Amino acid sequence: MSETEQHTEAEAMYYQLVFGLLQAGMMQLGKIMNPVTKKTEKDLEGVRATIATLTMLRDKMKGNLSTQEEETLASALSSLQLNYVDEVSAAKGGNAKDDGVLGGGKE
Image 1 (cartoon, rainbow, N blue to C red):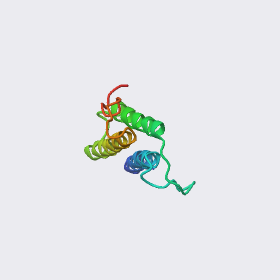
Image 2 (tube, helix red, strand yellow; image 1 turned 60 degrees about the horizontal axis):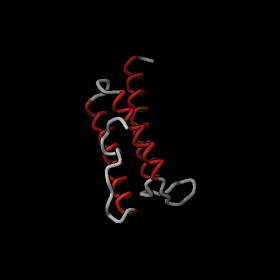
Image 3 (cartoon, helix red, strand yellow; image 1 turned 180 degrees about the vertical axis):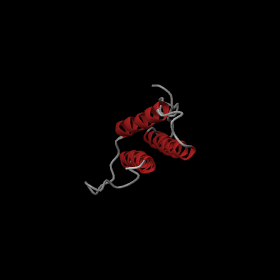
Image 4 (cartoon, rainbow, N blue to C red; image 1 turned 90 degrees about the vertical axis):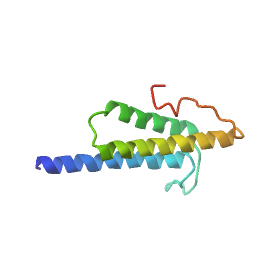
């Protein structure tokens, strides 16, 4: 396998990982149906872990990603963070505080 083919395969695996985590997070938020259970279910603790995983990837891979890869990761992370805050806010009657999920830093 040539170096170019390895690079292309690694990029595909990276995007598959990020989009897989985004999809898992959206399922945990109850935004999309779980294809296994055929139900929409909420797991806010689960989505916190997914957000923490994406945050760790961003922090650990800083400087090693292309601009497009960085933007894709940032978009996935912010989408989950904002949807998480909306769900927590709705559960608390519209009065959610930042519980560290939006900081994007170390918890």
